[in-house]
Length: 416
Image (tube, rainbow, N blue to C red; front, side):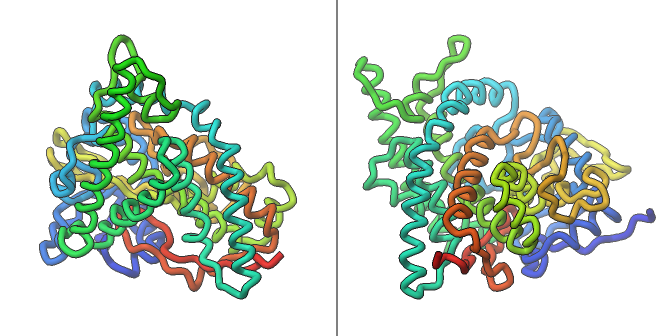
């Protein structure tokens, strides 16, 4: 196919509302797209990969596509937020060691141990929603249910006192809304900087106090912070900063993405009533439905890597030191990988991998955590309200060039 210039503005509200037609143009006509700097928008020069195979290959080669220079197309988001590198902003071999240490504490067994408490919480939320619906209130299922699930589990897993768990929502909100502000550190940006400072202060004190208890030989709660502080691999242990950084990563990166997975599943199944009926009739289809909904509407749409040397893909030369955006949301709808029905929802679709959790060294360490939360959330809401549907057409979406999801999503059918 003859290559042609594709017009792509990552901050265009119309593109953010529905990026998939633009992604298709990129895949077909300019799979390695050069986006020139646009100072009027505050957007620097970057390249964009949109095909599944190119993205999968790039994220598996950290020696060429580095994570150590930030995860967006902005040049200084790490410094602007006042961050030192965290696990997601490291390359091997440092990343490999830190990840192994984190993995010993952030295990599937530990996460699975939250399921009983999670189900109890979900049922409590559902009972509250039912009462509010019976009183005639219009229910925002996203803020009233989907986003409350990961917030609860984070607080539970990290061992936060009940009274302190309310702190998580404002922190998450500030960190996610900064993306809508184009990383311009005024207005919402200042809110994010304050949130980062507050979060680091809170968890810094928690980590230091827990470390002192461990060093003194006293018993400490069996929560994730304690497990991280005690984690050991081949004689190596995590520093207090490593533990603090990981707390930041899972609060900032694992909360809104999981809530949006739950809401995207409800919205896509509403739009496909026959497949929704299949899930209601056979709850064993929920895990597959979640995977397919995540593939089709990836919570994380794009993240960046930075080239360590000049490199060519499909005849396009990308220079050393270039920001390269991996458009996971596009790759997950690539017909070259998923066939001619790639854009369609098929909860029985058979495929071996997708890009929503990335791949390679930075494959999402909390993927099992997200899948458990989403599965429980969907199972419980459909068990309680088999007639629930959501108003996708009237929903308010976030306007981020990096993530995709909702601000508000109203639901009906909660009066049962």
